[in-house]
Length: 389
Image (spheres, one colour):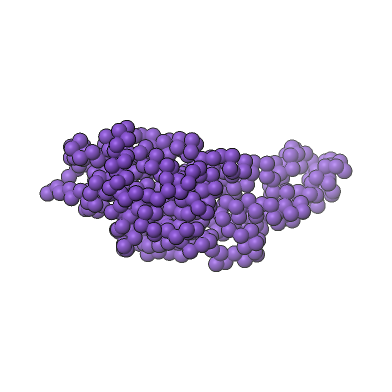
């Protein structure tokens, strides 16, 4: 190859000399010598250069994905396998292979991703009870925010699908919340219905539970709190919010169990909870809340009354007192106060004071590791679930 040809094609691809060196495996000093004409690449090296310098369909594919919120770093580190190189895009079916990995991660059709124009692309397949409501009266739902939520929903729904493939055991009907509460308290392992109890109840009824870490989503993605889904004949709860509180995780699990118990989720579909701190709207959310509170506390509402606006420390002390008397986790008592009053700053402050389990997400992960039939998944899907949860 002539020096000017190498330089022209490199620049046309938007590559620096350093980037071309990294793509090809040559030293940057060699690239500089060949472009300056101080030396010529061997015939074998010239063939290798031509392969990397011809127009690569991966460039346009990456640009289209970037427009959907999937940037280069996320694509490289999370979706594509470690051995992938964009030079493979020039090989027969190379682009199809890359698009297949992206389609598997997002749960969409590969053919849709390969279209030149992705305007109006919809991430979420299936109907799903997705409610993209404004976070407050002053913040309307923008198209950008809705698109971001749809991306997060698609990733979460696909994670549920793969998890469901490996859930062991038969799907069992859930008891009503009062009966389930009695069963869990009779286990005798905890003073109240704990996160451990709830995870035990989920898995023993054929309901898989995973938590998606922040690596599962592109940076800046607007994420919901949780998603409950049917995957084939299995049920899965996906915890999404980066929440280390055992009380919050317990409430979220109990709330999603309420959706399953009341039949809010048809087989083959899912239910998305965008924000569990938002005002409850609709019969389904109220029914799920009622199930959660009766399971965790024995009552639909604890009716906590404080005639003044307490500090978090005051609420924490009252929560501990109530906990000792009624076998309710003190953090759940504080959360009930937040739900009743809307004073979430005070409630969450109290939760941070009283929560005893500082490794709540580790417990979710331990149940996942012990309960899933990992052999039911391909090696790539096993690694994928472990990487993002």
